Amino acid sequence: MSSRPTGARRRSLLVAAAAAALVSTLFAAGPAGAAPAAALPAPDYQGLRQALQGVVTAGSPGAFALVSDRGGAGGTVSTGTGDLATQQPVDPRGEFRIGSITKNFDAVLTLQLVAKHKVDLDGPAVDYLPTGVLPADSPITVRELLSHTSGLYDYTNDLPGILVGDTVTGFQQFRDSVFQPADQIADALTHGLQFTPGTQYQYSNTNFVVLGMIIEHVTAKPFAQVLDENILTPAGLHDTRYVVPRTGLGGPHAVGYLTQDDRTKPLFDATEQTASWIGTAGAAISDTADLNAYWRALTGGRLLPQAQLAQMETMHPENAAGTSSYGLGMREYTLSCGTQVYGHDGIVQGYQTYSYTTRDGSRQVTISADASNNPTVFAAERAALDSVFCGAPAPKPAARTASAAAAHVAREETTGVPPLTRQ
Image 1 (cartoon, rainbow, N blue to C red):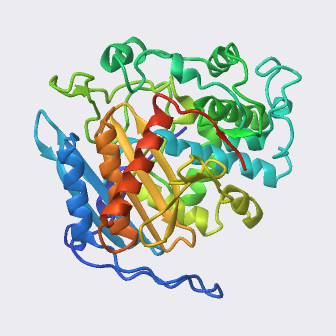
Image 2 (image 1 turned 135 degrees about the vertical axis):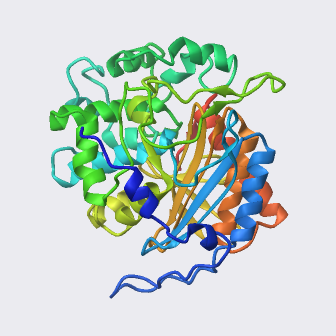
């Protein structure tokens, strides 16, 4: 994959970003000919700033966000530092590891193959894989991989200290390792299916490692090349990349820190790593501007036909409390004002991120913190969504619901949660 320009483009973005961070932004009513969606209140930038300060108070050195409208206009807010050694302010346009937001890239690439009739969404996944990756009689469908209803065990549960429990020692054991996806899937299969495919929901990184292998096998190209040709170039994403097993981010970025299990110990620099342990389930790198532009391209019909986008956006509850739902590689939250937002969260060593859009693409936000292994930080980021999409901080009952949703997602991404029967 060719190198991507970063500096010139980044510096040209959001010329008045610092001033815009504290003012309201007008948002377009909708594309020509489309039924206008209910108008959103202007983003509450002061509330967003307070929420990000709460992220820092919760234990992240820095936090930053970019709010955008359909045309790409908006404002940035940032607080704290991107480097504890130099105390440089965090750059709201810097790059970071996006973790499981990568899963939505996988879903789009897979659904593009569905649209081209190269993959059957409800066909056996084994038909699109090299021989031996899944058992020849595996009943798991491509849809079940995308929706986390396959029953495949999450192989990351067996890795030492992924994001909780002996975190730093465990991370140091594999930060420079290069894993083979087929081996990770084989490790998951030793646990057997956790339930009959299609009957329950249980978040599993194994699903999206399998999908990465499907994408490579069907296209006969490396995942990074398929991503570049079918998402990054069409959407004009110049600062997004998949570089496994290279260890650097490639552009200006905040240092990513692991929170020690013993909170009295200093944060640990986890920036440099292969990210091979998570691979196509979470190893992409991006920035706030690119992620917001990605959601605009997706909701605007530039990456998927409407039929496949509708499949992706068909949601089912992912927990008994109903605080969030999951479609095909996409998560949905209903905020305190009733607005539903779509996107994904990402947790990977050093960074925790929320990246969300309205369904009509009229507003996006990407919020990131430069510290992981801290559920309190993750919950504080989730609280910021209401300021962006509802125009005011969430009232206390809604804030408690938001915190519960964030806690559930954090457990999904780390320690795992019991399966939920599909209705």
